[in-house]
Image (cartoon, rainbow, N blue to C red; front, side, top):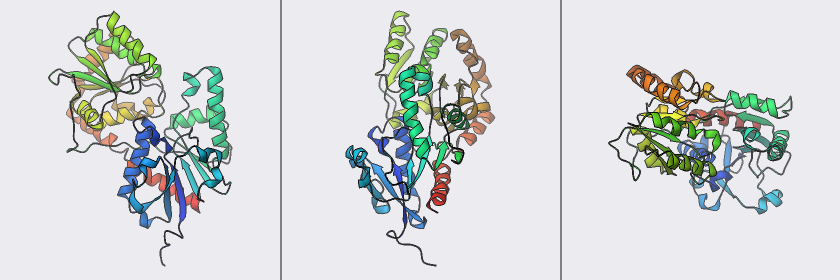
Length: 360
């Protein structure tokens, strides 16, 4: 039996429009889709990928795929899209959707955090946007069982729409990955590390206050610090004379690898997570992880992380200092083995099976 040519193959469009913001969490997911496509044998697939990307990403996968530009006029004139059999929106708030009702629509839902973060009016607007995409979807995937439960709690999911759980993939740094110590860091001083956008839901203030009880350690916080919450943290640090906490802002991939590899422990007190990617990244480097067990984190971190049972600063400091000596080599290896089950190959292969079923 001869294989179909690329012209004969059905088309699967991946909406990677979020690459407009490559340094956010979703942007990193989209970048890893591109890396994975470059690694796999696309000729053996019964379909051909079409990537919806900003113009500067044209050619990111060579001639293995087709490309559609991320342009605003496509929102107004969606019939200009090329004909595809499957359209995969990799997150629930993309502004792009297929025009033809014959196109199968696969929707990935990461979280419904807007239900907690936004005012009632804004939350209703977000909810309406997501509901329209759910109503259009032929199939839905969630990134955790927690997110799936939130989906059924807050949204109206049609009874005949299948809903699956596919965990996020994690980009693992290999042993030879380049690393770079961020500026203004003394590598000789022991330090804790955390990363994420500086928003109230990340609860970074709790570990900043904790550091008053751990003066012999440093804490480095990486991530977008051009936020009101970051300014609130800076104000607290200044008013309370805390000199062992530093906000690093955005860090490069090489700096992030260095921080993971050299930190004494990774701290993640987040209150709302659809998945909790940094927890798995830290575990992949064999580092002790101290995490809240809120929302999805009890599912993703589970028994492999030390738990912050409450956020009283002195008790948090005691949790860290009491448990650091308990992090044995055996526990480190078990944690790393667990982390490496979250591969992008596994993640992408699960989606490929869904693409095949939708194509048929």
